[in-house]
Length: 544
Image (cartoon, rainbow, N blue to C red):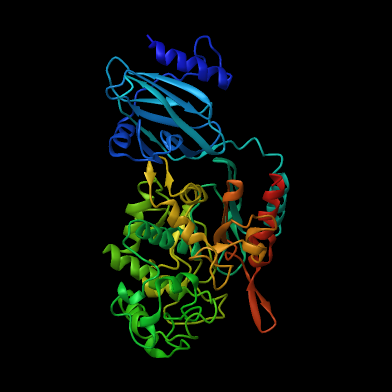
């Protein structure tokens, strides 16, 4: 039975909200919790953890009310009524009454009928008895799938990619998320199409939606940056401090003045790369290294700067090699182990890993890259070079030969589906489901445009002023950020539109074409592998 006070309050609020007065038709029925949900509620996991009623401010309207992120058609609240027998809540002006079950155990209520895309509002109204405290936990959103709603709108994109595959482009996987829903997830072409001599194989292997790709420099974001953002959020790393504060051996030639943020902004002054894997590298034979420990020693003490600190933003793999080393120092774990334990395993991402062939992934599950080792069709020669079509081993020479496949700048393999979950963590303020990995303030810090070059944030690339339209497309908002990878991968996170795009291609798995005294990968000349047109067409399809 409802108390008279609760009934009168409920009726008055219901009239204001326009809900039915008969049968409490908008009230949610309590559901039992799973063991995982019981743990989430007990340990305070998720997006919000609340104990109501509260007195957090003398300004009464600030008490017992919160906003939370959700998407239309999903949402739940875990509730431990403790000593309360009844609870009255409001979600986006809709009343929800909860009664303690006979067994007194915590319950879950489904609020998916009341949620909307973006910010939602939750308010505590009353409990019986009025002095009783109740505990509530709300999860972060998780992805749902509806591939039919925009199928017709995406047909021009399908036609473009399929036409290019018919003309020789190797393959791609495209995944689009809008408002928490996967609305596009398609595979095109082949995971392996060409033999090492550049001719088509007799039985090319069709690309699958869950094919793993060498994501190249997207490693910088979804391994290294995520690790850094978590360490910052936990107070274990301050990017405004000198690198030497964390890596004491980093000294000499002005290294003491370099800050962690200099590496993230790419203003430390390093050259774009050092060819440690070649004895004839431009820095001399002393910089030849096929051993991770020796490579790290060279980076800490020997690799010369190309410019002074802060002169200009020069995209450099050396910056992220150092950042990977910094993570290993702070965490006391190898980079691949740290990100697996802190991110990929908690999120259930079994297809996101370094050195996949060493972890039981079949080579047929992985998209192929270059055709003749790292020889550029026989034009490049060095002693350690591999032979044949590269597949399942990181393409990047520095990561493979000089870091044994695990480096801060490259080496991660993943699928479009796994990346969409990882990207959701950033878009949703640092969490997914009942897991929180870093806080919103850290995300804002990392995605804000650099004061040195607005095309960069702290590691992330930005769509500010449209200078990177070749990556983000013509219609990305000023708030969009993401990254690309040399093998043919691009990611876009656009908070203004609750939009995420994963475009994975194996465009380097294509014949080399002579071009005067130079050459190019034929896959680089197709629109699919140039990103911007596909991104633009996605915004057009969604009328954004």
